[in-house]
Image (cartoon, one colour):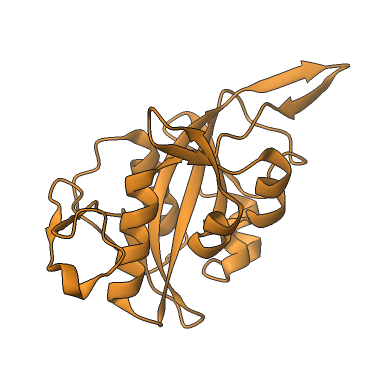
Length: 192
């Protein structure tokens, strides 16, 4: 098991284990060295930023880069609503994940998994997948790298970041269970 420093990765690993999803956690402390001819889309040609998990399933294997974001809940007229769901990633995130997808081949699909830490238990209408871990609430949204790249817009040249506009993100992101790796009824029940 790789060392997980951030609560987002720890929470997602708990979710995978609780739902008995086969996976391998990647040791993100090291960058993989490869030769430029092995991956034409590599940012530096010699080192790739690690992703976080390889997830296995008969329906398809995933290369997951977990992106932890905080989700503030707004309250108005007695109802809760999610604030903007942040979907930003870096140039290196996009380029490295594309290179990994190329290296692993056609039986693997690269995906950004946005794991939102919610201040309180969000209402069911906000997210289809919510679970608790160590007294925190989390919600999952997955986006295939190919869909993300098709919709991404530059967020900051200075910081080298991209994002997906809110409406496009709602359209292309899906609950993780939609990818048929976790039974939908188990995901809905939560992994406490």
